[in-house]
Length: 469
Image 1 (cartoon, rainbow, N blue to C red):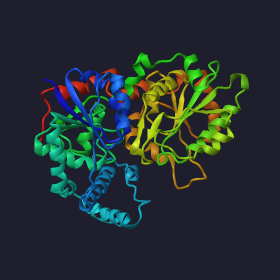
Image 2: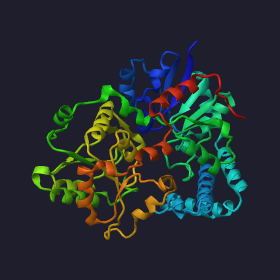
Image 3: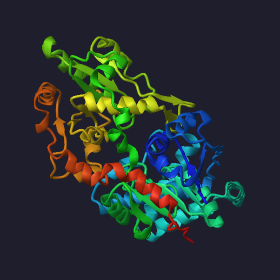
Image 4: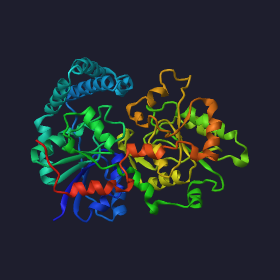
């Protein structure tokens, strides 16, 4: 008899990293899968064709988080950030607390949360108590509603594609009452120090042994037996030959000159890198200084969730030089969680990495995407005088960048005058840049990179899944 699996998919990243990966291919013969999501049904339209399976979706209506639930959750988050920053001796962890733009009642809530969080941070048991109170303040009506839906769906296991959405917590609570095991993946390489464990599943799937150790450091109350190292499927696409295009085909598809070299600037979201347009302009100016016969084309890929117009001016200024390769994502709303990818974006991303000489950005995992093909990455490490309220120094002091200590993992552009040298190195001597890039990636992601989907599928189908009391 087939296992009944319920995939809870909070956003488009879950579709890209899990539903477009080989995970469903490994599951389809032995599992009956339903996708439960607040995304529109159109977001899943390509999943069935990709894996040759029939798609079953159920619309997920997310309950509004009660005031007390949110207050205790935010207070616990603030307390964890204070606790983590102290114990890791890293004040940049506090930058994950984003109260600055809150207004009205929300500003009051965050102010109270800070007051309570400061008190709770002095004893770890208080943090756990606040998190317990946050869970307890979900109403019985909301939990009962999800229980009823789970009874109708009757899954053997629930898989949440990431742990960051707090409004999924009552689903975990309802599943526990029904005795249904809940498994969740961790969203990204930086989440655990930043106190972004917003739900409480029974089992956690982490990227690496390093992340498993992080779980023990930041969440010592979680049984290590429930933390499984599976890697993440998001890097598997780079090994799928059916996505590969030859250079001429990729050039024709995107209006590029196949006879020129290509260099890539990868944008971040507005919060992570507000100065991206200025850095892109600096790179474009440096590219123009290269003699025309050797000048590469500058390809620009913005972050999939960045629908802003902040690049318009620089793209217009350098319209004959910068070629935008916009992510092929759609949006049902302006909120980033409502963006979802099309399968064509996988082809674009894979071949962008395969055929570009190198990538430039601010501290992005694109360094790892390019490292799959042994392509270098340059991280930008200088500030803009136009924006004194933000410093790139904060980014590279984030806890997850301590994984590259003592490693020559990337090249660095430390001021505007270093662009010419960086471009020359990247075009003429790429092998000398970030010689330890693959070693760094082995710390971040479990190897071999091609086995993650299989490992996750094996666990979801196994008899070892448990529902904790």
